Length: 297
Image 1 (tube, rainbow, N blue to C red):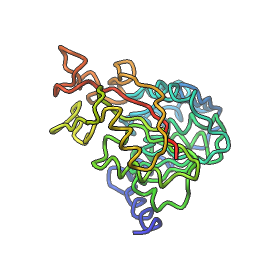
Image 2 (image 1 turned 120 degrees about the horizontal axis):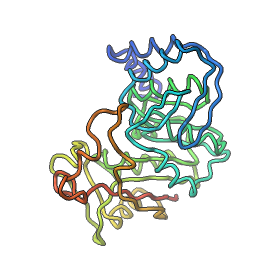
Image 3 (image 1 turned 90 degrees about the vertical axis):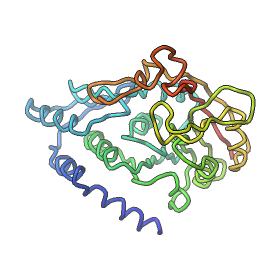
Image 4 (image 1 turned 45 degrees about the vertical axis):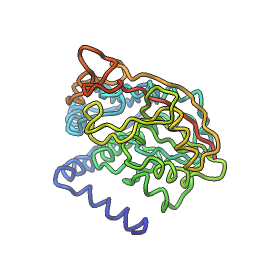
């Protein structure tokens, strides 16, 4: 299937019975005068009536769960499950996006892309197949009115996408892929000559070139396939064609960064860890730790 056919097929997902009513509410939103600030909290100030703000809050709640954020729309604080500014602020000293063509693979609702606007990139394109996350993005972008492009595509579509990127971010995706080397090859194909990849993924400690392969779930998540040591991850990247790998940071995920909120009421990190030993998951595996790398062609 070519790119246009895939895009048309994915657009139909917005008509699913649980998504279509949200799209109708989105289309009915008023045009309101806006000011915004793209800091740790993506803040949007509206010159809106009490009735308009109530409608906006009700709609925002209907778009739950909010995984990435936080966002604030006037006095409406969307307290996402992830304090995503922690990851972005960790990466920000290592990135220069000015005049670059940038992709965010697995972009969720676009929080990181909105933050990237402050660096004045030439173009930002997000890839995420979720119609809910697309609708959350469109809701926020209704007010910000950026020229960010949101494609309901996956990493596997980089091979056929009609644009190459100077910089690709792939944050928290690799461990969801059953073939990590194939995924890294797709990311490489999406880069322009001289392009760079910023990637974060789960890791386990060790000097051997091995990986953890969870039997059923990892931190109660079923679609976690491989969690490598750093030497194994380096090998994956080299096999995929990256000539140099720079380790930027290694960080244990903690309860300040990921937690249950009223805007994301399902289970969160606290439920995924062994209550008697927070250094282990409920399955007995090492607790989530992430490595952040920069890959060069």
